[in-house]
Length: 205
Image (tube, rainbow, N blue to C red):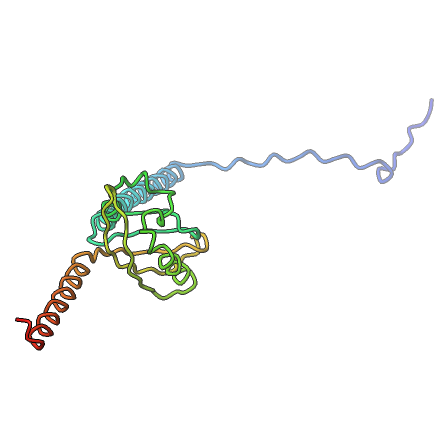
């Protein structure tokens, strides 16, 4: 019989130790109550933010409507022109001055509604407005629907804003027909008075 040899355990390959199973964390009732509380707090915060967003949106709508009313029904015409002098925006007052619907004016050159003899002065005014940040003024005659004319004063300046295309200008149009007519009547009255005085000096009457 063969003798049992003593085995040198140091020469044996190390056996992998069995993995110790980690104990799963136990969730008690207090943990679930804390989690439920956190979720309720988060839900309350979301509802509050949602309510504030709705209120802000309503305020913005009210402000937008108020601005639209002020813009559209102002006693002065307002127009935004691009670098070519074409209408990008126009309020109802300016559209009424031209005797046309606003939708038909958008995208059309404003110069089409300027009296022919006033077109050079109008174009010069636009060039000055787009080159300067300060307001510039001019008086021109506008042709309205039906063949009539309006004497207006233009106050224009280059439109400012990083979100705006370059070359845009904003224009305020004030109807000064009444003032122009009053000046014409005063001039004619002065001329008649001068003729009358000259006739009296000559002894014509």
